Length: 460
Image (cartoon, rainbow, N blue to C red; front, side, top):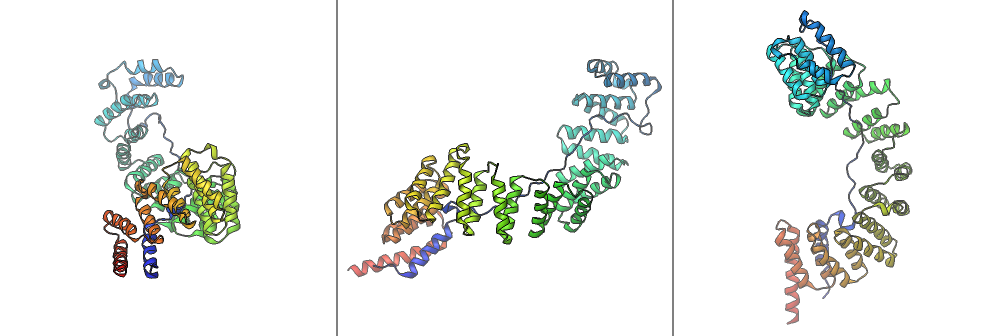
């Protein structure tokens, strides 16, 4: 009996709905990735003596303070520590204790530095410098919540140091989100308008807060001052991507590339944008540029293959695979398997049947659990009407959890093609039992049951 056209189309639709692009070994292109350097953060570990307006060293302590400074300048660590241990904290003024805390900090004796700072603050809780230094200490010790607490106290008590505002902005951005960071970064930038760290921090906060117009205005000002700075153009590209301004993103990336940026991720993103905008010649140049001298991960090679094949640029896809083949021995076995899968699909498209079959088998020899290769090879075998091999490949794929459903549906379609409706029905029931929300499968189960009943009635 011939399969009704309506039945065939429904089964094909059901299977298509259940198969992802990865069945044929291709992954949909991932999100654009623009590599932007993070703002550097410099933490001073020794901040110098306290101003007299904060706390005064007692006259009898001057000589000792100068001795400590001298020993520290000469790098005589052991003598510095010995000098520090001579007196009990209760005998020293808060200013002298603060100086000791800073010396401990500079010697990386963080526990003693922390205890000494806390002693100072118990005696003089209004000392701004002690709060800011303790905040820096907690930053060095990777305790950001405590660091934020003490920087905030320093600001509340009237600190006017740009570094305190900047560090508070950084911690607010990290811990509490962009809106809590904007004001602190603005204050830091107002005090030190030429400090790139504060400008970059403010730019990050504005961008994360989706305040794109303000971020763009700030960035334009920075670029006007430093037009040859690669990171600024990359930031411009990333900001344009956030606004879905793809042409603006291309301009930013192209300027960064022209200024010397060779990061393969940025080259790939620029190529992807050019492909999306129809600038195929430039996209291909960038693909070549990203391939030369770079050991690209298989994920990138797969993405390139996907783009090129979708555009019908098969000759370029072949050239790309030939270039990637030069580094094939550096890849792990499972990555080599993925490469040979792509090569097999290319040969299948070129109707080089024998070579495609050889490459499919090579992919599976390298990684017998490569479910994408199993499914793609099975589909290839079906097209060659080699149903026995196709069935075996589908059975193997069913044993792999992430491929089970696709393999079962593929085998159901195979049985439909062979007009073995009872076997197809068993496959579809197995899928529906594990996926009760797959209503398209349920519909086709009913269709196939009707066909079987009609066949049985006709045979009587």
